[in-house]
Figure 1 (cartoon, rainbow, N blue to C red):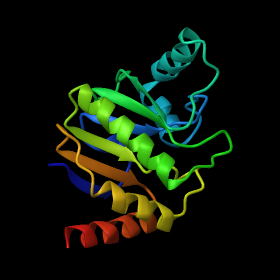
Figure 2: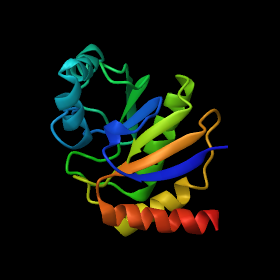
Figure 3: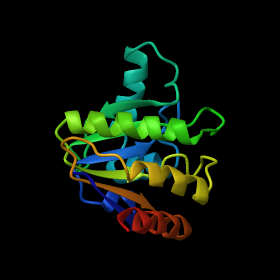
Length: 172
């Protein structure tokens, strides 16, 4: 059974096997979690991601897709770069849910039993705290084979409060 948690902290500090990193369609680690990853662990991840695009003759990744990468110096076993936004940072609940499903399944297939996850569509994305809380409510009903714990993490205290309220209602 998958247990869901919420954390008000730095995503890169969460102990987990797998990381779900919010990503833009160009896979540029220019801000948010990706930017923090590059600052902390160096340019190896950016080199890997741009190489992925080049090797697959792609200019961008379509929203709803996930690129799985090696840890590139981090303590995670694998990193799922989840593209849940378009080039204009637009998204919707269905896109976010589909992207989480793909990212979590790919990490589980890689043997990750614990996952630290960014709140997709938030930050640079245009999803409000209440809209993401609705996404979280749906996520909390889902179970992923082999994954025992998923921790949604953000530095936005209001978003944490919204998600915790939904989690409390779910666990009733």
